[in-house]
Image 1: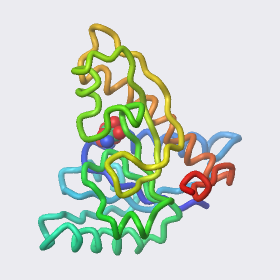
Image 2: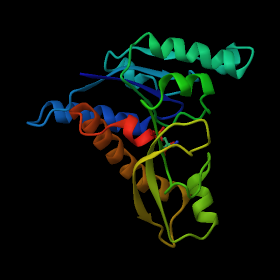
Image 3: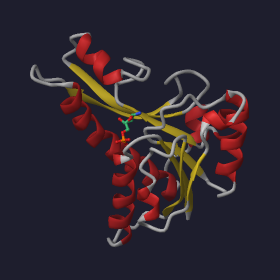
Image 4: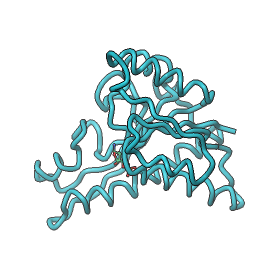
Length: 201
Ligand code: GRF
């Protein structure tokens, strides 16, 4: 059973989709041997009810409680490790993970990004694509490294931008694809048909 810890900062709609996808797979004839064993956040404002309503342990490690980023990272890493994950996923986690955390968890540390990397890295990818006047963007799932959205790409899909798109409508369409990339990646990792160390090498 692949043990997964997921870190969020906001609504966690992609996490909700992953939870539902795993439940649906479990009830199907093609179950996915993966379990979300904990949900963590950098803020109490994150939607940790996603864990509470499913009996999944949740935790908050808030940067403001620590003297600096490195100390916060060390506390976050210690908390994640309490659950012994085989895989840690950042899903709308809006903090740059400190190097000691990346070095300890990667390549079993994944993130999704709402653009076709290396296009539009950073925290405003959807808005940046619209402002650039692009006619397409995308969704990417990648291994986290010590850069900003620069890690080895596992998979990505192109998504068209329509003239009447707003940041909200485009981001919603992107998230649908991110959720599929996430579930497919967890499915392949659980089945042993995807090797993160090979991708990261
Ligand atoms: C996703 O598009 C993710 O790629 C980005 O933030 C969004 C998270 O949305 N970093 P949600 O919190 O899962 O709804």
